[in-house]
Length: 248
Length: 216
Image (cartoon, rainbow over all chains, first blue to last red; front, side):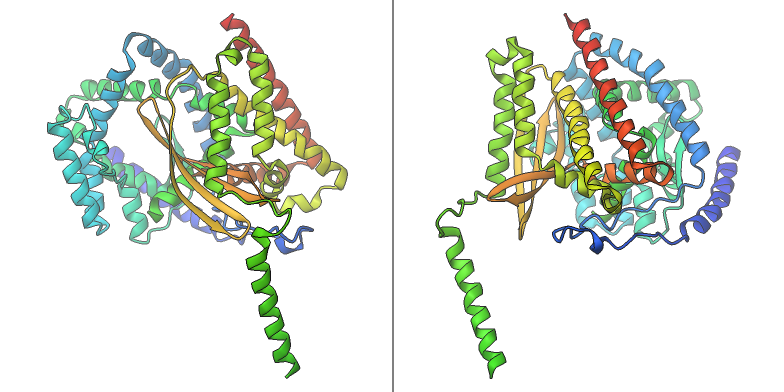
């Protein structure tokens, strides 16, 4: 709890710094002057990122990169070799289903009552017919999932994103996203199931992570092959995805 | 009075152009962007599953490279990815830059297809939006229990719909490269950027070779 308070204080401090940085105007030269008349720039609304903590963020990014190549990837490969794919997909579905309270509560908080109803139906169907969530029959029934979280809720309430932050293990985020992660932490059933049993909780967290990585091996590698600067590419991808999710 | 007359002429002209152009002689009958894209994607899937190509990876690679150039308008993708920096390039630099960027995209695109192991790929075609010369086609790729939304932006070039941007899981390729090029060019020159592209392409080639040798 003390740690959380310290974290919140740190966030409040960095938020102040970020706002100052974000206020700097973006110099975009007149695109009309390009020598091509069909160059109507549909990309002019680029997401502008305040990243005053780039030094810290890059260090954390490198840490996560090493964590992937040195630890997660070898473990996930071994795991993939032993556990057949349908089982791994089942485990992923199980955890996705288990995290239902995050999506349900945040749909409600954003006033998306239809979506929260759909989430509830999905949860009931997948938990019963779908064998405790191992299967995802709701998706076959064309019931879409609504990937809402507390960070998005705060965005809907009008809170600015604050600057970009990269956390070890958790990866790309912002000040607002981090507060969202802390909020969602209390909505996770695993938080309450493993309350007071840190070791078991961590083991389950690690297991879920390895399982998820085993289904995505190769993605990060091809990203690195395609880009000039993985740090800038991941930061931009994060902001593009967040923007779309918040708009939805 | 004259002004009004002009207006009517313009209206008639516009009407004539609208009605006559699609049927006009030599006017390539434009396919719908979605149909066009579907045919191009099927070409790729067919090549990937062709038993003849499976035996001869070099021929498969040549085929995929050909398809890549037929379906992408790389010059336009490059222009958009460089954004405001495009203006700073001399004509000579532009001529050098476009094929370099094409090589980088192609090396990663084909590298990705190397990992393909005949697993089932299903593609669902969703909405299609057309605005003037440009179109957006939404698709979902379903493979190995994952649903990946992939949207294509296309531009009509003489009746052919060419892809100029791919949006995978809400991330636009053009936007992503624009952020990288912009970041790079704020610190270094265009020549440095081209050197970096060359280095990256060589690195990808070397990595692929290593991977292929390991497979044999």
